[in-house]
Length: 289
Image (cartoon, rainbow, N blue to C red):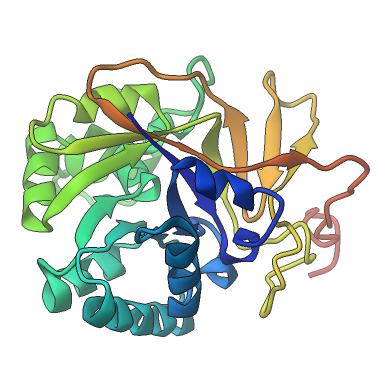
């Protein structure tokens, strides 16, 4: 089984860099922060250290970040065709399909797989309100006018997207690998033949945000002060441990054992003691706007 390590460009020369020499596939970039996307210089540095092309990782891209990523793809198309791209942005997926179809190996990232299974961003056993309960009404139907028909349930609940639709989606965009950190989602995609499967361990995504606890807001520029730091968050509102890393929140998941699993992706994390995350002082409803 292939083993991969997810590194932002700032970590290429960091304390975890020796792991690059152990044969692990390098995932270069970041799934949650636009400021930690790779440049072609980063790509070349990782290739020099490991002797093979790294896998490029994207996040949800703002327009300026998208332009930078497009420049990266243009360089790779010329100098490193066939590079694997983990796509976590629907616009980027369409861009690659229209301009570079067949030039890259396209992997559907875990943000995109959660797009089709939104309710499974919660750990098993956690509860959340149902969007729709047949015969009992739902909050999502409150805007319907008299005489309007409700759409099919899978059109209003993305977590109910039929597997056949997903199978055609993967074929339509030339996706050869699918990634997730949910055992439920993994087993769902395992039913689709011909697609490779990756699993993230030991941290499972719970939510992402543009509010950076290290910079204290939505950062316009960033020197990656979070690096590989992992902050443990404690609250009586949750019955499980929650962690903050960069622009995302995680909980621990279990190592998956499945015959279809052919790549395990880990991200370096060092517990950061004594750090107090920045707090948005205007987040409380009784504070001034």
